[in-house]
Amino acid sequence: MREPLPADLFDEVCPSTLSPVRVGDKWGFMVLRCLAGGPRRFSELRVPLRRVTPKVLTASLRALERDGLVARSEEHGAGGRRVEYRLTPLGRGLLEPLEEVCDWVRAHVDELLDAREAHDAARAGRGA
Amino acid sequence: MREPLPADLFDEVCPSTLSPVRVGDKWGFMVLRCLAGGPRRFSELRVPLRRVTPKVLTASLRALERDGLVARSEEHGAGGRRVEYRLTPLGRGLLEPLEEVCDWVRAHVDELLDAREAHDAARAGRGA
DNA sequence: ATAGCCGGTATCCGGGAGGTAACCACCACC
DNA sequence: GGTGGTGGTTACCTCCCGGATACCGGCTAT
Image 1 (tube, rainbow over the protein chains, first blue to last red):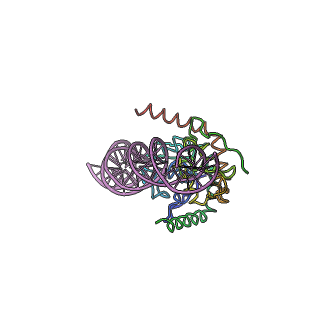
Image 2 (image 1 turned 45 degrees about the vertical axis):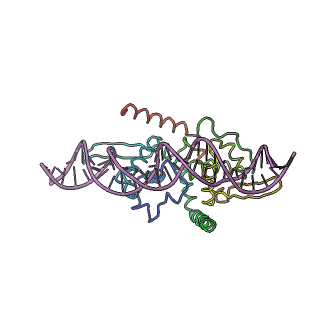
Image 3 (image 1 turned 120 degrees about the vertical axis):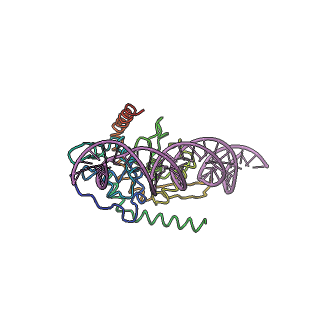
């Protein structure tokens, strides 16, 4: 259940500006997907989401927590503080239909980008 | 393919504030679903989406059009102007995985609302 | 004691989303 | 020529999302 996280989800381009589908706020969808592979610490999430400042990441996590999709657990074991975020059963259930959306986006992102480019070019030609 | 639209999608409560899942802007998801039953005129869309002002509805439609999910066609036949919005094949394809998300939301909206209420109550108790 | 890590806050700020209200161009019809 | 319907547009305003930057409190290890 605890699969490794990618080093960086952003390969120069921000995925959340490509896909029109969102969960909660701007980064919610990607946070959920980062948690799909198992519980993660705050600093673990910051690695693949390195373009997200801690304030914004906290806000995303709090919002997902509010909706009961993510659970936060804090403990003070030996070695210091440890805060973990994990999907709740509700959140895990939501990820199933969302994965199909993800598959669709991956399959059609080129068409989306082409459509945007064509639309913007046509507007630029007509207008200013 | 041209199924009737409900008279009003808003039963006192705005669905887009309940579901954490969005497509494009605030109303994009509902616009797509209104078009699922067949092409619609602008004024037809305004009936089920009566809480959406024309400016905002136009913005939603333009954004969906930009992404190639919706197509706009205008014609001046007898009887006046007629503008129709319809799903493109791309948009129709996206609606399939989205319908499963919709099913999930319908099935779990109560849990979502309970979670929010509990979370807000807990915060109110702790904080102010 | 002090340095460092972890998990965040505090503060400021700009831009854009989204709502309100009013107005408008075009055409048909009478 | 006026009236009405359709399909918007324009101006204006407010709120809040999201980013930048800096800072902080608790804990541990040395």
